[in-house]
Image (spheres, rainbow, N blue to C red):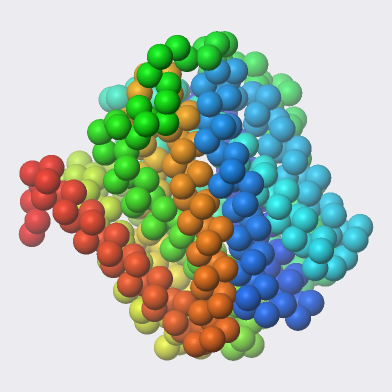
Length: 383
């Protein structure tokens, strides 16, 4: 099985997933949603992944990923139909829940496939290529969401996205049989969660991963809220969000060389600090071009983070438990993502949107300090 097949599946999934999140957030704002409601919507996207990612990883280890990927693609496509047939906030929240369910099933399974198709020698390059396709999808998705809403309206845009989200089913039906198979049996001995967490670097990787994902999600959800508040159109908002993903593509294309030059910990620390700086200055700009530049700067930093922690989690996992380890990472990420948007929604309502960006920037700064400590403990340079 060629890695290119897995990359194609990842590209389609990321494009439609990101488009769906932006589309539903803008639809909710169109219906008059307040920041607290947007925070609850963001939490809804993460509810199923928080509960199901770890069990899905165990299933992927045991049974392989083909049927899980099929189920995830189907759920994501069908979920986006609901706001078309039943307009309203309830339908938007239902679609967000099914989007999250699809994410829980699809991403863990596909990340495990990418890891299994790599070797220790080419793993950095393979995960970098996977992250590059995700960047392309994350660039295309918000653009599609913004322009399709302006051309077709919110409900029809959801319908068109539903069709696109079902395209992976065609690829899986044609070539899914070549994906890596599972063990076919429950792992005997050493299979507890405590054993998994005892792996070298697993707990610290979970901590840094959750901080990175929380920062990226809050940017994706509260940048549209901020843009809406200052009167930017849906298409301009989509362009600003796309610039974040374009920057991530640029830096991920250089990631293998950056890691070879500086090591994983130093690159990760730089990613955190760059993200913190972008959050600190973002509320001072109300011009679309300046916001696009800030988003691009944010993407240059944070684009490094997720590929590194995903690769670390796969490499640190016990033999035969890579899917479970990746699922556990997503579970921890989404537990943070369920609580974070709700908390920051109340922060935005009580103190203003600027404090959402500033507080999260401080959290990212703490993540940078943690990564610098990891570098020192690993004997890396600190200059």
